Length: 231
Ligand code: MN
Image 1 (tube, rainbow, N blue to C red):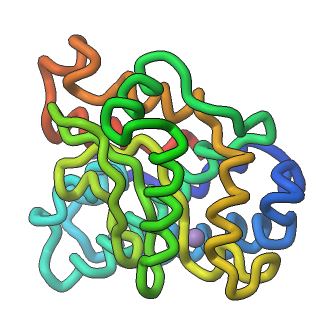
Image 2 (tube, rainbow, N blue to C red):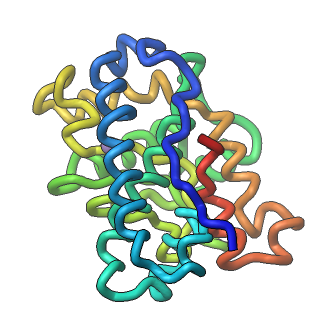
C-alpha cells in the first residue's frame, strides 16, 4: 500500500501577484507557514494511523471521517481540512481574476440568488457574520441548487455531502496585516481576484451536472471534488 506524503502545492502565481487586494506578506505567511503547518500536523496525526488511512488523500479523509480512529479524528478533521481548504483557496484566486461567472454557473447563480449582485451580497454578509474563524462557501448539493454557507474552523462542506464551488478564508491570518479588523472590506475587495474559470470547472464536475460523474456519485466523486493538486 502506497503511503501518501501530504505536501503543500506551490502557489499557482507569485506571492505579490494578488496585490493590491491581497498583500504579498500575508500571502507568503499564509501559504508558506499557516498552510504548511496544517500539512505537517496532518502528517504527524497520521503517523500512528492504520496503513489503509495513510494511503488515502486528504480529500478522501474528509469524506470518510467516520473511518478515522476516534483518538485521531479531531486532528485529521482540522488538519486535512486546513490542507484541502487552503489548496482550493490558492486556485480559487488569480491575478487575472475578477469579473463575473459565465455559462452554466452564471445561470445557476441567477437561478439560486436572483442575480450575481445578490449572490455577492449574500456571500459577503455570511462571511462577515461568521463568528470566530472559519470559511464561507458557495456549494452545491449533489442534485440541488447552489447555496451560500459557512463552516467553523477548517471544516469542509464535502464532509456533509455538499460540493464546494467557491470558498474564502475568514480566519484573521487571511487578512489582518492589510485589513486589520475590517473583514467586510477584505471580503468586498476579494472579488477582484476570484478566478471564475476555476469555479466553473468545479461546478462542471459536481455530480448532477456531469453525466460522467453522476454514475459514480458519492464518496469517490466527493473526494475528487476536493482533490489537492500535486505538490
Ligand atoms: Mn487560512
